[in-house]
Amino acid sequence: MKIIERAYKYRIYPNKEQQILIQKSFGCSRFVYNHFLAKKIESYKNDKKSISYNECSKLLTTLKTELE
Image (tube, rainbow, N blue to C red; front, side, top):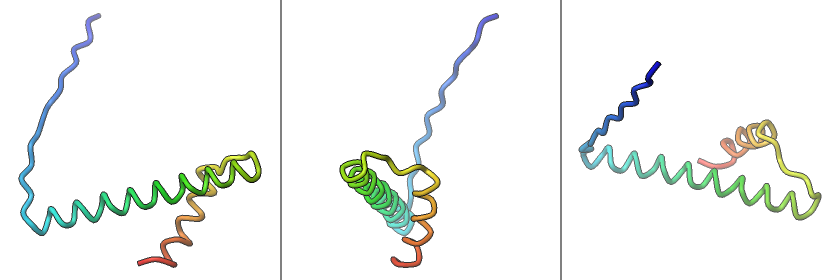
């Protein structure tokens, strides 16, 4: 049996409002990733244990209430 792989490329042309929204979304994602990466590094340096996904998820809900 032969498996056929296909790829599709799409190009989008967002308007100014959509560009701003996309940039904000990427900025938020970058902030959250770097925030929890720093927490994991700090936790490993102090306790030699890493923070689990579930712990990060719980901390994310508290982070949402602290920040806008």
